[in-house]
Image (cartoon, rainbow, N blue to C red; front, top):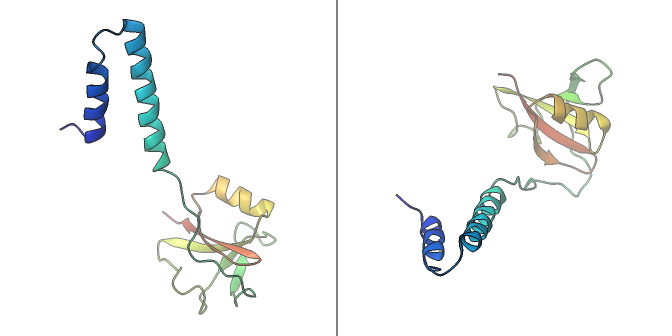
Length: 127
């Protein structure tokens, strides 16, 4: 089953019968590039919808996440975090913009959940 976009591309190529092979090839390349850009546009992550512009909420830090002196902390349950907790992931809080936050994301499959004035909360899958 062809999608409407594929049908449009197919029609556009067929509607130029007198065009040279080179012109058709460049048209196909341009159509392919447009298709690729359109598909990639749907893959972007959006900013978190939950952000706080007021003073930071009460957070319960359990310990450093990767080591005792890690700037990223395993975070426990509080009134603010209760909806972010997941039995298959750790809730980890890092100082916003810190080098520790950058390495946490690059070393794990951490997903940003929300951001406050000073902290960014991540979900790190355990499995």
